[in-house]
Length: 584
Image (cartoon, rainbow, N blue to C red; front, side, top):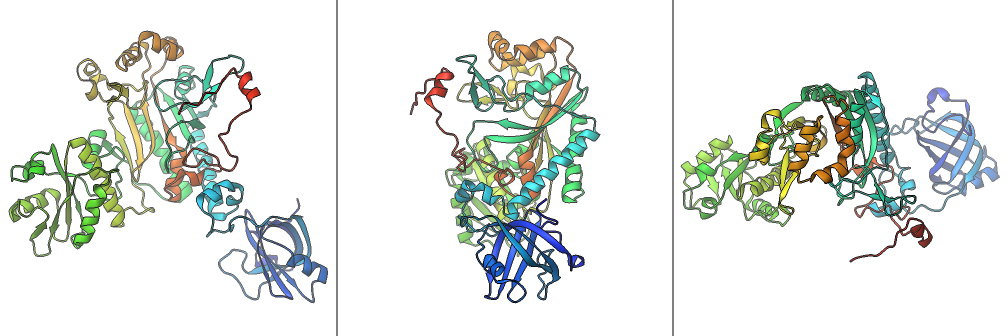
């Protein structure tokens, strides 16, 4: 080794020891005859001291020539610092250097490599290898590493076998767009990169593996946002001879294990909520339970009073913001403008202030009496000092709008504490959802999700009412994982394909290998996939998964560091039997 110790391990009991350190120059402070150099590596920072009189002139000049991010090695004696720094673990000592070697000089970096940097996102992504030197970035990847190790520990103890599945697979029509890879030896044919190892993990159950898991790369060619990347990581899992309850119990256990071992938090029991209730009371299928503010339906008490907007609405629904009656008219106007933005799409907002004296002040006072407004407040559980916010319109759209408003109010009122964790299982999802563009039903999860047995007859009469044996794990309003009990027999799978609009020929071409496998004794099975990057972001208190990926893409799906994607040489295209024609 080029060093005897790291830059993070020296303490007061190392005083008088000769040590050799190696790392990057964090900063140089030159006081003429006295030079301090902060030396940094992955483990911490140690201060080196070069002092005129006890250091020869050549060494002093060499130290003075050092720049930020020079790679050096230094040997010297550990001494006690006269002015200690209690902000770093090594702050009680420094190394009086007797020897210094520059292993590699460095250009001046394009941004300051410290926790508080002056580099913007795009610049730091271009020089990601420099950004990764910053402690705040490295700590996020260390958290990711720890979570990987603890996941493997838990899964191994629960008798799961880690199996790698192929990365070059077959393109399938369901789900997001595939990334495709041309085959040189099979001209005109393409592999696809897996959106998930779904069919392979089911085949592993047919193979008798019983319990499989994999921390696996997946790929989706879709529009990007903070919690999406074109390549991402899943904890992918499958189990045989199990019910839905077995899977919820097993992976509730994994979640609690990770919180205990990584965060030091004993997680409370994970609540259960049906998809129907999640949509009714929170307006989305991943409700944030860190705060209450449940929806209250006011249609019956709000209609028939002459207010035409409410009278014409399919749904009148509101939320109660506790303690918010002191909001000024200006603040309420700002909220109104916020919900009217195109991204939300509400036509307007009605408010009711519950005053301290028991009276009510509302934007619709001319249509509703104090008794009417009191009835609203009682339905909403509103008390003096609270604020009711009400939207109306078509039911589905209005619930979605109010869901966004609820989250905004939770944020504005400081109710979405990143140090509080409220996990939830959402169960009983619809099996199918209607697509207006294609005018047919699509699988809400994927084509292999099993319907609830008692709902199978509804496939012929009311497909939209069929419930699935499907479940999502939600933490703080973020979907962390989702899965289902799978179809494991050919007859039911063929029935599902038919209702999804596949012809017999299409189903055979896309999934014939799986259908045939089901005829060789497939056990009942089910599983779940956790979004590992999202889980890391929740643990680290971040909104973006990008912070937990070593070399992420930007919002355009580009790696600006290596300038990818990029064109390829004409010779390569010929080898692949591909001619490029760009359609704009």
